[in-house]
Length: 254
Image (cartoon, rainbow, N blue to C red; front, side, top):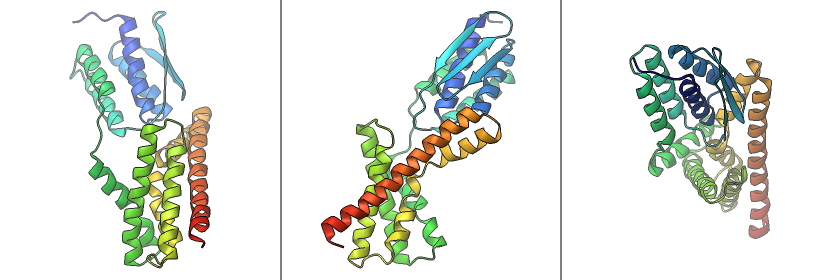
């Protein structure tokens, strides 16, 4: 059996928790998974996770680590990969050395969908609200393409500007401007329905859901932090829509 120090186990547990928290897992799941891995390695650990840091400490000795967390874009595939690895380690299907290697591989992996798939996904997400509104077929397809344009603009801005909330604000501004222009020239039947539908790819659905789960599980601080982030994104989206309408009326004279 390989010799593993308490510091190595605590460090790996912290890396596991950091990956989970940075990619969209709620704090309760992070804490459970970290302690789960520690027990599987025969070292009971205590984990406390917040939105800015993870604290992991051994119950047997003084081994303690603090890990700084930077929450950005979510990647739920990494969350699933880490959960799968932790289960395999608990069932002794993989060794500690193998688990450490795979965790580092997941951490450094930049897995992403192609731009074609992401654009099609953004367009499809933009269509269901139009069915709810019983919109015309023409508006349905316009929402598909306007949603793609807004998503692409937000991603382009996010790639060149790391300031939070600016990408979704500019994406929603473009959606509002295009939809209102199309409605003004008579191409679109109802610009408001198109705007609501095309905004769906920009809506912070995961932060909203996680904030509710955190608050329900009495993780009040983390829940409020996530909720505040979601509200700020919503305010940015709404501001972009208003500015887009004002800009269209100024330029178009509508």
